[in-house]
Image (cartoon, rainbow, N blue to C red; front, side, top):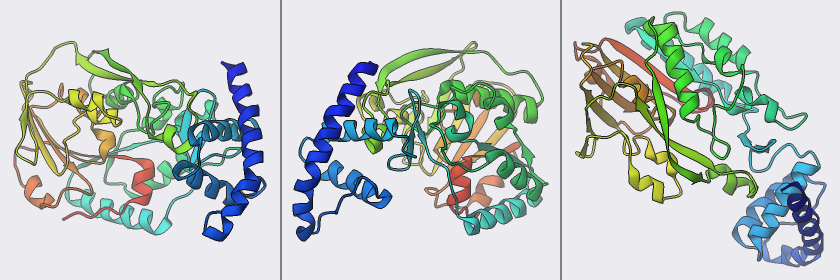
Length: 348
């Protein structure tokens, strides 16, 4: 594989260099100008070759290999690590973070909130990063957030997930089934205060080629597996989606035939989704979340008789109405740390 990659590097580098003269012809037509020494022109190259240039797939793969071999900091906001692709988290919007911390702290004063912020692969998969890869110090950032939201109960995922890695997809920024399992075990340890239930995985697809591949052209990265999360003690489920659809499964088999295989996990969960389980715990949870929580839900069905999933960014109803249900015993916010720092949260 290494020899093939290096051959592709050499051939494609030659194609790239030979193409530079041709590409300059297009400058008068509004096409990007190119320079192998300019970071900005690298970005122009990535965008234009992805959309317009002939032999684009071969060129993009060679360009990605060339950037990896020359120690480039990344392509399209993605680091090409050792056998994996890692989305960069090198910066965030301080104003958005300040707003979200204030909003969540105000919410936590009125409601007992369990806060689950999922660290990114650039923190948990550090050993796969190229040399000199820049990134936010997520440990320090999480500590700062925790200090500013003292009324919330935190699940400390980072200290566990950073120990060995392998908890995120190679071609997708989301955590995989193993990563979500660790998240569930930490929730049981830090919040629910009891031992986690047992699960096993069944591979549903071994050909998931996630969005980070498209952004980089690093086609040699091995495809990911999509896995069904199977509890040792199966439960019966009724899943009611906001569009009126009712299902008895947390999984969308149709998503396995699409490019967005991550949609296998509760893919229709936009707005508000209600899940009734056969687990007789008399505990009901509201989960305010982004799509990182969807792969966590199969684990939480072992803990709750009812789960109400409220998606940030797509739920247009009143959250206060959802929370008025006296049967709710636990409230969670589950988000990627990167999203928490960059996507403004509003409680309505």
